[in-house]
Amino acid sequence: MSNAIPAPAAPEIAVPSIPVAQITPWALFFGLLAVLALFFISADQGAVSLPAGTAIHEWVHDGRHLLGFPCH
Image 1 (cartoon, rainbow, N blue to C red):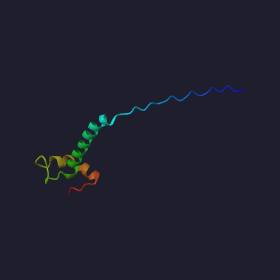
Image 2 (image 1 turned 180 degrees about the horizontal axis):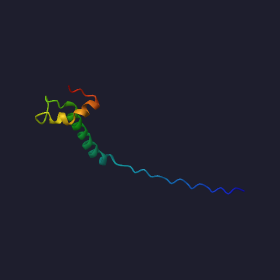
Image 3 (image 1 turned 90 degrees about the horizontal axis):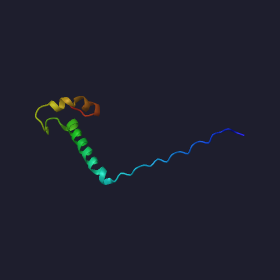
């Protein structure tokens, strides 16, 4: 005779479904934010600079090198 206690049953985990209509605005927002960040990190060299000067270039200078964008 064994005194083994039976293991409790594993609870079922319900995964909620999120409709695409609720995800789409957030995906667009973060996608545009990512494109804007990529523009300022990669393309803002002065030729297509939105603000005048080199302030943005200096702010993202180390990030440019980290991501492999040449800037010198």
